[in-house]
Length: 161
Image (tube, rainbow, N blue to C red; front, side, top):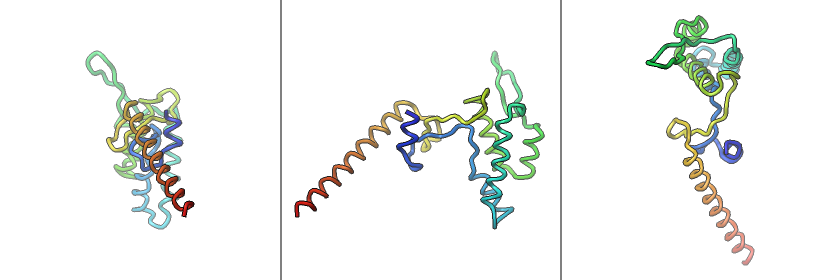
């Protein structure tokens, strides 16, 4: 289903594929606009690329393990030097983008540390259920079928005249 959604739907659909663990470039662009207004997109891409490499480095593990009841949970180590430097130099926006990507990588693919595709409900800001995805697919199919049907009827009318 993920492959189908990836090919069929545009970036405007409310249910589509999201790569979990990928950096949000918007945050990088917003911060770089402030410091480098003339060449912010290039600078944002450079910074995001360098952090992307670091995110994939298995030797960097900015998490600490805390015990909650009978289970252990990994949380971001606020005292990690690289994260502290990032926050001091670039601010909260880029810091949050990196932390979000780290958490997603740790949740979805901790051993491989590369982004994983997931069906996502962008309207609700959460993972899409299989039922939602199927409903979206059926609704989209019916809408496309109807549009194609109208186009066929119009072309038939024009050809008839």
